[in-house]
Image (cartoon, rainbow, N blue to C red; front, side):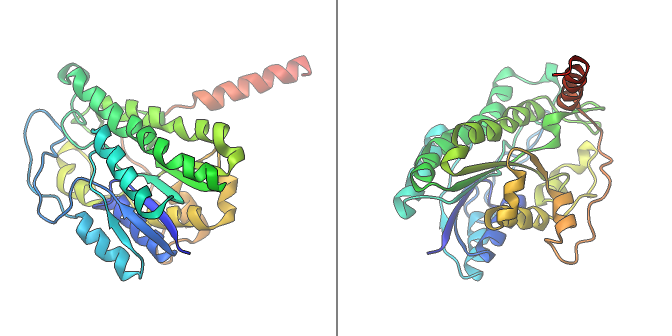
Length: 307
């Protein structure tokens, strides 16, 4: 029997690549996003200063075609990450169709105003919307998909995280940095995998944080140049290859409880033949080393006390 997977944000970019690579690895794939058909128009401006409803490349129909080209079933379930009811309906529909899902990939995130606006420019409701879409929405879906995983004694949850969740911009939004809602919500989501492992690891559930690094997605190419971001990143296939490796290779168990820095893992393991490897990250970010600093201080204290 084929494995089954569910992916959010699968109409383009990383989600589309994950769907294709999981299909290639033998999974039937349920794909979710808002954009079902090519050419759909909706707001995707990252700032309140202007509107942009020009269609973005990609759709669930196009991703479904890629999955089917790999000989696997594509199951399309449209949903909006800011709408809990639509998420619940999507998850229930998938479970009614397959009964369970082996792999859940939380890739989708909030797209819209507030992402590239500064704190005093951003209404609190837009911060709340990003927190819901980028963190709480994962929990809405997990509460549907985890019980069948626990009952079967196996399952994998993959959260596509961001270094912005454990780093600060060194420039303000609009000048190469980013607004507060994105890192705040990604930091919240970054904590989910660890708690899932603590609560359900002994029941066969594996949860991972996968940090993609800078990826040259379709939206990055169309929208983000005006905010100081150049296409110096890796192709989305890098993340697709890493997610498929996590889903299929027992060696990935060693990464449970750790953050998978995807570009480095992909290159070191040769998961995407022909890809030359990551470029240095020149984005305006400084990484938070608080956890490592505290671990070092506590170890020094134990050493001094002979504990």
